[in-house]
Length: 321
Image (cartoon, rainbow, N blue to C red; front, side):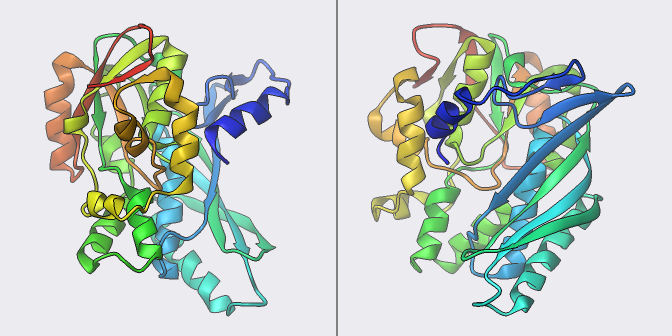
């Protein structure tokens, strides 16, 4: 569901919130947080449809994508429940077994326990996790940013377009390889590079696109963000496939959601609204610590770059320069 539709839907549903809830749905944060006996517990859930043809690799991507929300809030995932929808009447069950094996490889890499799960017979394959985690020394929430911070992105964007090329059998082997490398990399390693005291806010880039997730931070924190378009890293082949017209439908829904809040070239707004799967982290960091953090991120294998900075709230939440 697009961010605009989701926003309108949730306006009509008013859930009660107890005093134990530290982070709920108010600011579109990546996880909910509840305090139990002085422990701050994070909870999230995510499922996706296949973005690659290989069941094992799809399982890996789905798990990395599901765990990402916990890392984005500075937490450590503790346990997961598998969630799978599968057309048992159309495909052999071995396909689902391969999906789960792929997922297991990343669950093991993240050192997380599987406690069970739930399966549904469906016409379309879907897979993901419900994840429970433990908060770190700081919980990164969307309203935690302030002016005069650098914004670091840890992975290139463009997964929505490149995976669309894959579905259309137009992708090159090299571009597919690079896309998979990006989507199967746990954001655990980026989190381990952080000094929590140098970071004020963080989120991951997923279905709402780069601009959608930046907008959620800017709105919650009441700041403005300047984005340096020329510094944004894109996946290999992104612009080749974009020129073929391979723009996912979700790009337009994401664009419509942020359009009135963004100043910049219309084509760039659409490009930066393309949905992502298992994207990187957006890290809002003290300017005097950015260089040091970038070096640590790159040394650990992330393709991290500075893509913008924060400022005092102006007429638009985001400006593309």
